[in-house]
Figure 1 (cartoon, rainbow, N blue to C red):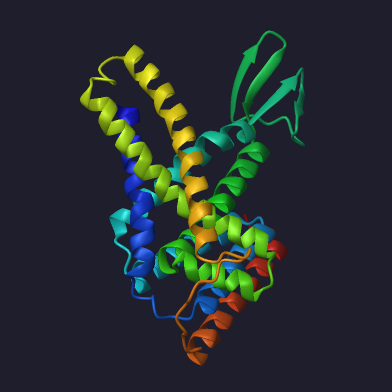
Figure 2: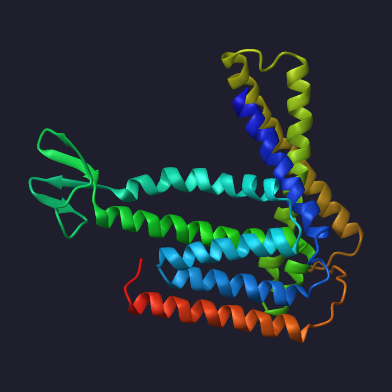
Amino acid sequence: MSGEGNKQQKKRYMLKIDSFAYANKLRNVHPAEKTAFALTTMLLCLIFSSVTLSAVIIILMAGVTVGLAGIPVKTYLRLMFLPFSFLLVGVITVAVSASAGDTVVGANAAEWLVKIKISKIALGITPEGLLAAARLFFKSLGTVSCLYFMSLTTPFVEIAMMMRKIKLPALFIELTEIIYRFIFVLLKTAEDIYTSQSSRWGYSSFKNSMNSLGCLTAALFVRSLHRSQELFTTLTARGYTGQLNVLAPQYPVSAANITLIIIVETFLVISAVLLEVNKFV
């Protein structure tokens, strides 16, 4: 039942993200301003490996998303928990070091914080490994917070519009739009199949659950292929010539927002450089 609950939970979060993108306090802000702020901040998070800077970016993005955009705190924390749990498991392998004898593989010192010896091989955590894991964890979470800001405050139609303005390949943009559309189609189709299976006790036991899951996956693939063919036929009937043209509203450019973005990004750059120079974590 926990697995079934996770599926429903992820579906709700996906639908919430799309609804918040159309109903938030930053909805009328120019998408170029939001894109510049999110992407510049994410780039700084990727370039610099400071845990402190990444933590500041996480707090900054949370404050802007919750405080300025008006996204509910509980919803935002639950969304952040999804990558948090995934990253926590992933960085464990980075934190653990191995040694044969007195030499630590992947570290410069043989100082152990935690050590388990198996035959002639020792596994454990060193300060270097722990620092590398922390940097990776906070850097990844910082970039995710930037992407959440974009997805929670900007509808995908406007994100596609920005991709066209920066001259990304038309094929890439159209594929992205179709994939985004089919996410919701697949969610709806999977929900209908799941409801039908559940009404027939398809998930009453572990064996039945595995059989039903296999049938759901197979049926979802067939129906998705059928829906894609229907979509192509519909587009062709409406004069599709190889490009999806979508109307997007016009927004005024705010000099105050641009100035604020420049100030924030300058502060982050200066802080990152000072942290690097002073070799602060």
